[in-house]
Length: 206
Image 1 (tube, rainbow, N blue to C red):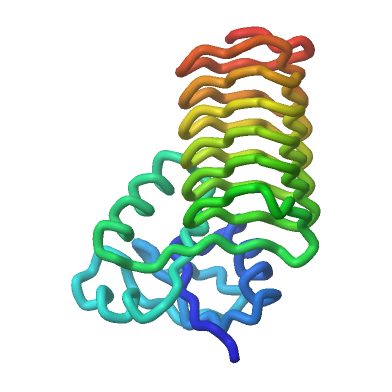
Image 2: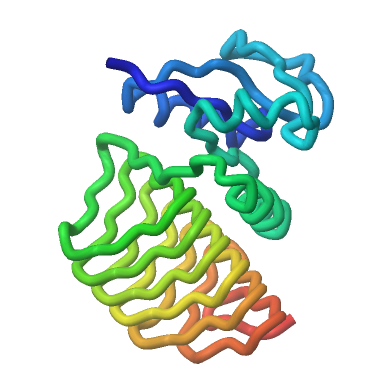
């Protein structure tokens, strides 16, 4: 039997989320956004803003998935939805690989080709983007975005709301602070403090 889902946010990132939901036998009942999107490749019904009081009942009757890449916006939406007891489960693409000993919290999206290895811990509303590798005992805190092809070696810690750029490599044991931005293709060999932008090989602070 198919489950029923609503997405919040409908643009490029959401298209991948929709594919994952469909591959998990979800029936997509529509999308919420601040305005109706003129580009509608999945022919979804526009339900209005998730903030409209009239939408609370329909949201309570569905699994709701936040399909927004920006960490801060995703955080605010996730916390608001949970405060209203709206279901925000995680969803995994069938072609990802997740260890049975890994932990994944609510609202996280795991995309095609992702590898999450033994004893890794993934927080709330995290994006594990296509073909990312999260090695053993990594700790990925809430509202992080791990971009496509990023590799996190063993025992890496990533703080809340940080962004790990595409094809970047994080050395084993490194601790990344909160709200950090790691540029695409960077190689990070040392710990990074909160609220820092780093890029390059080796990583340099902007």
